[in-house]
Length: 113
Length: 112
Image (cartoon, rainbow over all chains, first blue to last red; front, top):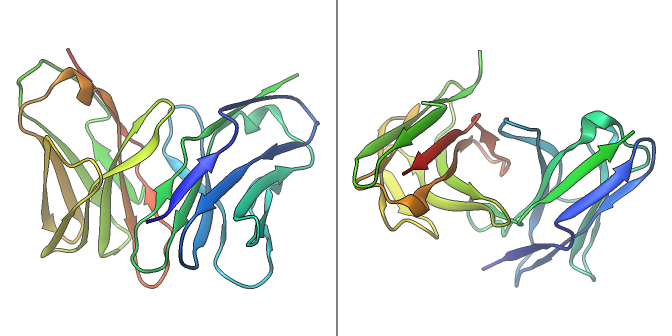
């Protein structure tokens, strides 16, 4: 079975500053990786995904993530955040053997002016 | 219109009551899932269904049951609600060869 660890539960950041959200996973097999965002009082929305190919993945709203197989990590970054990026972010993994996802505990990003 | 809808959006119920949460989708997906979200715990899988005749328990199925009435409908029931089932519940779908899931807006359930 796979598991996901999001290393920061809360990340406060000033507007226009960069942000990095850390995600590590454990799995005995190859995985697919995802980042989802949950805006207040809404469901989860896919930000980006890694299935294969280039280890640098670009998503919506200026976010990108890098898959590092040797470090079993999939960290999410944005070079300049906006107030509207205030949300909870979830890292998720699938071990490719079935169509289930395992989620991390989430990271709450609060962007201040 | 939303592709994945959940009803009700909010519900307050008393301990011991039976309650049903409903999920409908217009995405044409075969696979449907129920999760609960608790602060600091992320999303945990309750039940999932890969087609109408396939129902599987997730990691936290105790105290819950489900029904897949049609490809587009997947309901979650709490036979006798208890306070620690107070949570935000999400339905999700996926289809074809893709692994990504599409989420409904959630149902906030409070058991008093």
